[in-house]
Image (cartoon, rainbow, N blue to C red; front, side):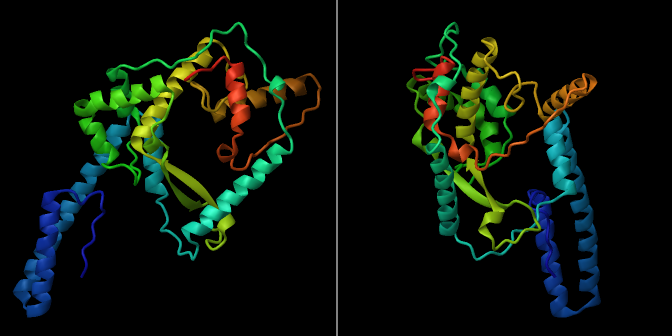
Length: 312
């Protein structure tokens, strides 16, 4: 008889010891077939079941308490309980197959961009806007706050679990801050931060796992690279906000904005048009592999038009 415990719960020395005793009792009873050994096994099984129930209660209570003040974490927690991840589908596809498929797909999309070049003059110039040529170094306290606020998801590239890094971060904070500030002042991202693990995931559970087009790539970055990304994002976001450079219709990647706000804005405009007895046409555009096919020349030109230059 195999005794299985959820990996998230099997961290207690008491549970591990009780499980070993229970497995030992099972083997002893199977070998001897004595009633006394069967009674001893059932007694241990009953005690182990109570211990597991208690451990589950403590585990989920702690999860709820740590997520109580963060609606997003709370939603993800309940989502994981109601819709647990399905086991991976067996597939004959190899890493080389995925690499070739995604590379060729990206190249095909980029070729269509090259056949329709975008003129740099199409961007709006903001000559009266103060330029951002250098990102500011950050204090250790700000880095610590970002580390603690990030979701402690661990990437296979991380040398230690992210939750452990958050725990010991006060002790190694000077070293992390030095790396972050070195990147900000030089305008270069450390090579190790540019590495990522790419995992293909089925777009929908019911899709055929043998069809490579049914997968989407998920990029896993190291925890520290995400900390650097958050530091840069905060400064760029503040610059755009202070100088009123955000697109008024933008909802994504914008503080205090969301999908709900975008839907409300569209709905309000449709209602206003209807009240004015005007016709409305809604065009929805879904871009394929958006972030993988960013035209860097266009991106740099857009940043320059926003007066973001230099090492920033």
